[in-house]
Image (cartoon, rainbow, N blue to C red; front, side):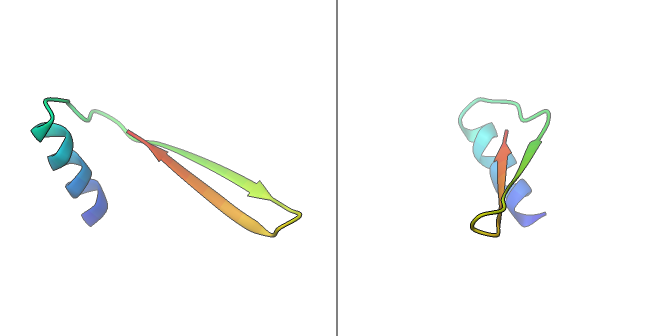
Length: 40
């Protein structure tokens, strides 16, 4: 939650409205690693 609060405050300072969050999950079986990409 701290990260979301930080990003929301940053967006307000830049004049943007954060009205949603997208989370993209991806898995790469060969390297056995999960990647999470969060877009605002």
